[in-house]
Length: 112
Length: 111
Image (cartoon, rainbow over all chains, first blue to last red; front, top):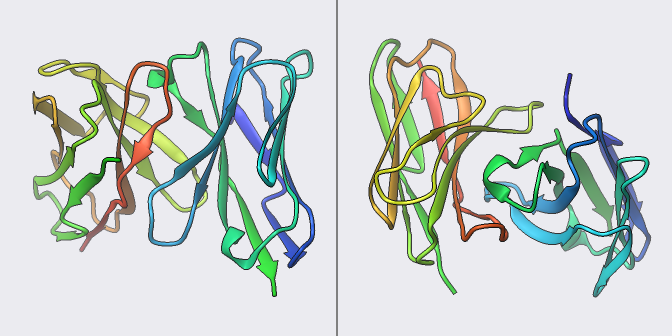
């Protein structure tokens, strides 16, 4: 069973719209989460990390973590065509990224 | 800023062949990683190294060897390439609990 599950598999939003991604861990020991983004032909790049319950905002990106439900989400407001990419949620047992477990990813397409 | 350089970008091999992928980083990071990315399966950890000459197995280490002879470089060897194997191998580096920085990958095709 995939320990880090993402939904939806793919997502299409209009330019300027809100894109939302979900991630759930099936293992209560995973307490630290990251969001990575991968454009076609490139390696993943980190967007943000979230370790505490609540919201974390960085520019157009907002992450939300609920440790009780092991759920983390990512929201992109004012989506741009350049945001079209594969988005990964990743989790680790501690803040140590040496055992980072990735979800299967959500593909975002932003329609101009 | 720094960069992770993976070579080669594309690697085509024959079944049973031993193939080596190389990775260099100039971040001066302690820890380096090799991940495998298959379509529909996310990223899976093959090996990581927390310092020079250290090697730690990930979840997918069978069929692979790794080598960390210098802080800045980490190589991965596919010990016997499997026919029809196609994947992207991603190298990354980080310092302790910080963010991973990835290279752009080596795309492997086995004929």
